[in-house]
Length: 316
Image (cartoon, one colour):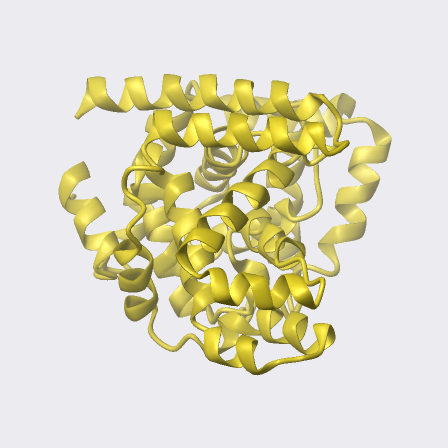
């Protein structure tokens, strides 16, 4: 298996081999969340014995039947009964494992794509990585960190392309209504073809503590890939349609990854700098009338990111 460094380099270049992908994602997830052996089976048994609240189990069951075959998961062709059973298992086990979060819509799409690549236990660990490490605070009723990171992304884009952002503001378009879904589903909701999406997810899992900065970069790169069309649009509905279909225009992921990594944001997206950005944007949102919980969520996310970065540095 590739070393952590070589795997990360291959992911950034879009060169991870399909046969190596499951093992690399498994190793990355185990490093990120440190689940003890047997945790998945233990929580799945507990869920089947009633550890999940009935309302959670009911919502999971409801979402199962609109996951595979959805327009969000392009290129997915799997045996329906087997796919639903595995997806149910992973979502129930995770809800039992993390009752504070339980189950949130969008998790079904993330888990569904994971199960195309890895086994149930690894999918469980990868889902935990996304929810607890990469997008901590996004999968919550108040979506606190989704609001904060949407504001951070808007600020970065405004500095990068003020003309485009002014144009959208004049039309009262809120790009975060679309980019939030890109983040929550790790780009499943971008309509990106599966082959490109898996290249994106190679970076998502192999970037380690830089996974969130990578996702913000990719949001910006995908957004800016439609720049000329967005500037030419003069109807908000047209703008939202362009953004929602942005991923459909992606053929190979390699140019998109190159554009994402080429953005001159190394300094603001370093862990400590990003933590400060998130706290600052949270405070601004609160001053504008958002709940004060946003500041607490940003601080909690910063502490979690700091712990993850320290662990990564200790292991490299």
